[in-house]
Length: 312
Image 1 (spheres, rainbow, N blue to C red):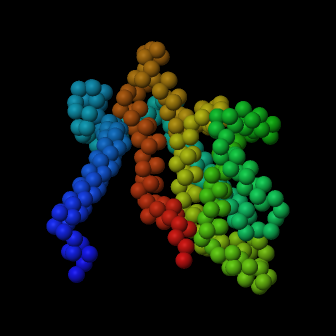
Image 2: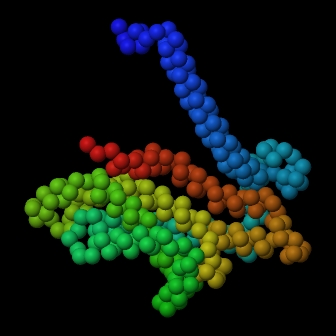
Image 3: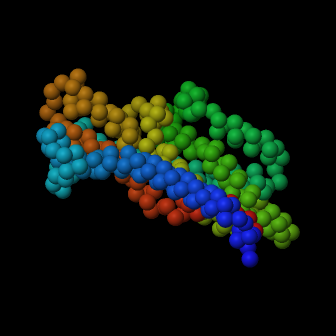
């Protein structure tokens, strides 16, 4: 017989009532969390659906039809052709700039952040603690506070209005270095490094033959954050790239906003056939790649965030 069955009937009813109350509280909490998640999903998904559907319609249909109504698929082709009239098709150059700027930044930032985290964790260099503290301090500094020093630095090395100025500045990744330090210090046993050193491995061989092959979840996470943080980056390219032919898509989209009467009536009449559908298509070019990368990297993203959270 259990202790519960030996209690008087009054105490049994009280225990049963408490269990029922706990279940109701859990159910209410679950419903609250699910409701909030649904609300958040609607707030995120509905604008994205509208943005994707907007280029399929004309200016008049955007104003008069249901916001989530579908127009014609050929609207995308028409909107893209109309965008080519703006500044002799410079939007194609902006798209190419965004792709190769971001690819270079992701590659450099991922490799350097991984190397920095490994050095702080496993190397024999001096002042490792000082390097870690300086990395944490750098993470706390607002990016806006670094704009003037970065501008002066880039100008002094003659990389102003040069794509490599933006690439090198944007590749500074203190958060990635700290994330790598956490990963290497919690996931890979120190005994493995010590055994490799006894076999004659130096620090670079430790990284290339042990740490790097075991760090694919970390590298995926670093690459994802570097991509998201730089694909839609506006402020730093705006400061360092005065020439419009060097613009990225987010920067070019702002230039497009200010240069077309569809969004900025102060510009006045123009012969360029750019309206709201064309502006929406430019927004799709900026927003959709982030969504695609996130959907393709969900599993690796979760695996990288949970790496090192459970130790045997």
